[in-house]
Length: 179
Image (cartoon, rainbow, N blue to C red; front, side, top):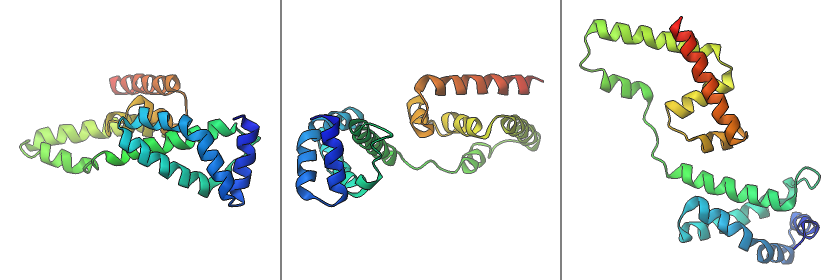
């Protein structure tokens, strides 16, 4: 099916046309399913996700801007983002970083605690010198453990751009901490 036909069907779905929705599903589900399967890894999960994706398409059809993007890319982005959201939802909730520090530092003497606190302040000071968006990306990568791919998706930048952000930010932190 051509993009102009898909755009037409999405327009009809805005009007809650169920036949157009069925035609869109029949024409595009075979292209969206592999996206879900690749990200989620399990066929059952991908099948469930695909159904949820089409519910989103039904609900968000009015947000499609044909002048801004191709309809195939819009549908693929919805599928990819939904599958990624499902992966993120599977992760256990990270415990509060301060709790982790308190548990790990329980046996430290006051002098060690003072030194660590001082170092922590130095690191925070250096992090404040980074652009807010890049400092947040560094924290997400090295404190919360997000991958380059997850960060690139979150910040809507290419993967190589995210790698460059993190590398340059770490170099700036090293320089700041060395002085």
